Image 1: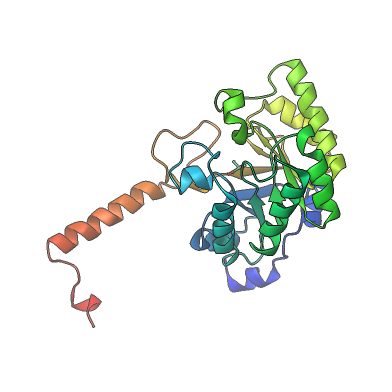
Image 2: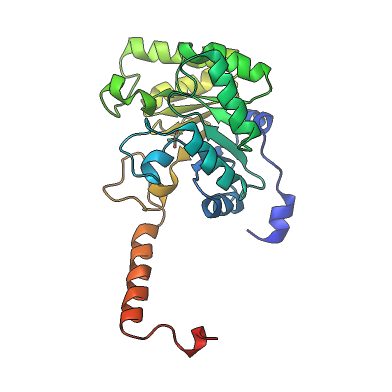
Length: 273
Ligand code: KIV
């Protein structure tokens, strides 16, 4: 992005995202787990940079998001904040950091804002987290909800399965969404639910919905850094799109460096002092 465009950019805020929905402007959210990624995402004009608990899978080699700790999220939030200028920095609350008591939830959310430098926090679930959201909002902490497939409930769901498929589950999800908005959430992530349900939820709320695997009727979309850049081994998931094969390009570059070093072609005189 050119310097001129950069200076015209407005800092993204929680109320600003609600205004974007009202104006019918789509919201872009992307995960980032370190300083260079945050800098690139911010320069590329991403509205919300999410330090997701997917950091456990994408950067720390875990199988699920469940083992991620507050210390780990804080560590990555602090790195990401160094690269953020205009985007809203959203920190995920890891499993166990908000389920035990409202007080603990408030303490951990406070740490993510105060110590980590996040601008808002995200937590998963419906009714069980309403009181925590109320208290955080009262304390001046902007909160994003997360419904549908909530990966921290991996063992309860028996895997990463599409949610809200039958009528009862869809009704429950819509009620939860309305309750989260009423409790003070300023946005809602909808993960892996039928597109028709996501559209219905989006049309029922004044706060924006950000979908992942939830169709085009949401007010914005969120993707995982590694997924859109092809940096993760294995087949891409249906709800992601690989925009650049950075994983392959990185491996090719590393092989070229190794080959040239072994062949004595690197460094050349140009690379020498
Ligand atoms: O942790 C994460 O990256 C997320 C997104 C998939 C929404 O919660």
